[in-house]
Each structure stands twice: as C-alpha cells, then as structure tokens.
Image 1 (cartoon, rainbow, N blue to C red):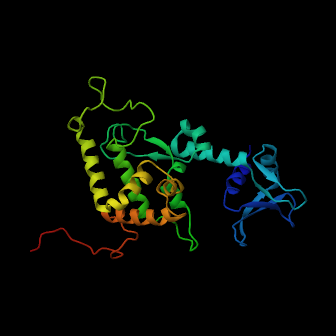
Image 2: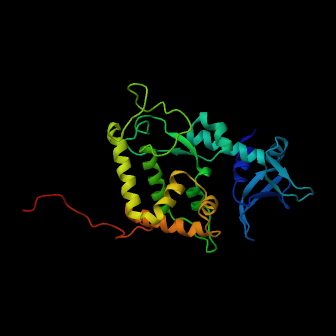
Image 3: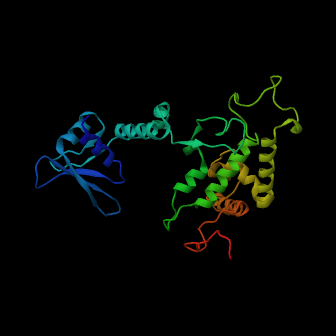
Length: 275
C-alpha cells in the first residue's frame, strides 16, 4: 500500500472524518472532519489512495459521484493493531485489535510488579468501570469522573492487587514459593504485602464504612454500576452519584486535587552562603 494511502487511512480515523471528491480538481480527495454540524478541512489526498483503501476493504464509499469515503471496520482494526505494536510491542498486535490494552503497573515493590520485570503486564481498560466513567461525559460536557478520582480508584486497585486481596484466575508464577504453598498466616507474608494491606485498610477507614464496600466492588472486583445497583437494590443511575462521592473522598485521602493550585512560577532560590 502506498504512503499516501496509509496517510489517508490514519486521517480517516479522526472523529467524524470522511473524504469527498474535489469538485474543482479531478483526481483529488478533500478530507473533512468534525461533528455536530461543524466541518473542518483536513487536507487533500490523491484519489488513487482512496481507491486502494476501498480495494483492500479498509474503507467504504457511498454510491454516487459525490459519495463519501469513510473508514471501515477492517481499517479500524488495522489502526488498532498498528497502535498496539507502536506502544506495547509486536506481541500485543492481536490483543490490541480486540481489546483496549494499557500497562498494568502494580503497587511499588509488589512481587512480580514492574520493578521485578522489565515488561509490565497488560490489561483491558474496557473492563474497568472507572475507565468507562472517565471516558463518558455528562450533559455539561465534563467527564463523569475527574482525573483525581480516577487515579485514586486506580491506586486503591493497585494496592489491593499488591496486598493479594483479589482472587486470581490462574497460577501466579511470579510469587515466591518455599515449600510449594503460599503463606499460611498473615505473619508469613512479605513486608510489601503487609504494607499494601495497611494502605488499603487506611484508605477504607478514611472513606468510611458506608462507602468502603462500594469501593471494594468498583475498584477491586471491577463490578459495573448496573450490577452494583442490582445487587444492592438501588434506584437506577444512583450508583454513579455514590461512586463519585466515594472516589472524591478517596482522592482527598491520597492528597489528590482536581486542579493544580499555587503560583504559576516559583521564585528563584540561590543556594549560596550569605556573607
């Protein structure tokens, strides 16, 4: 595939992007992007580039002489594979096509974490209800979950993982073994595990017993909001409000602010002895 065809494929990935034939210059495509009734020019491409994408089933063209050229499902999958290879390595190409992969950094010092292995584990961000809330926007256009609350929930999940408080779906080959079994009592756990458990206990105590159970289900067991409402017999769309309150308290406990405060520039300090 030509370089221009690859450039056009990447340009069509923008929200609301499409290409139409230039009514003045033959053999040229005009790229448009945007939404909500606003169209913005995105460049010009040769018409053979669009024909190559259609022939490779990466793009689809509407019928008619002025039919729009838009990105197809196969083209979206190809771009996801390329992004996964570029960001996570060639071994993540297939998973990156079907999943929303992000590096899964465990708690600092935890067994088998990022410090123990040069390659971080990957997880599907689409499985996280926190990521879903951070991506969704309300009627005012603001995200349902701000960055401070999202980071607080992710920090609690990392601590719960490091504390070995979550069930595992398979064997943990990175955990230390002495006699072929795990720790039989809390005293035999490592210092890193005990420290993670203390952080989790302190965070839940700071949030309060009325909201700690919700955080365990939401951040630890990754239960969706609808499932939490069903299990607790709450009204519809009420878990979203309670989750934002609980995560806000958790962010305050961790010292995370929604906005940076303080002077724009710090004053200059001279580290020299005064005469």
